Image (cartoon, rainbow, N blue to C red):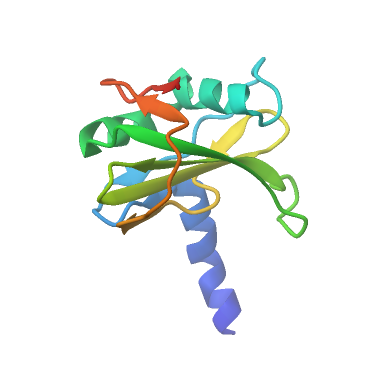
Length: 139
């Protein structure tokens, strides 16, 4: 019975996005056909900088993160249609914000895996620089 009661909450969580721990929501992008293709280093940066990801870029712009580590991920046990994607670990030396997107065959759906925040991570790469408008530029 407990699993049934949590199902509506889980569906709501997946459809509306995640919180970054400061009460600011990270939203999923509107699904649109794209020319970027499946996740790769180049396509992930294009998805991040796309108009449909404006909400996440705004969150990053306001948070003051200046560097990002890009990770391409693959899961063999994922939900159907969500077996690969990309995640951005935005950081500034004292804290980080991780925002990911799952490939659904059309584009990235932001908020999967769930957005997380934390403090004091060592050994992070600087794959991309965060511009003043929240867009990323490859280093």
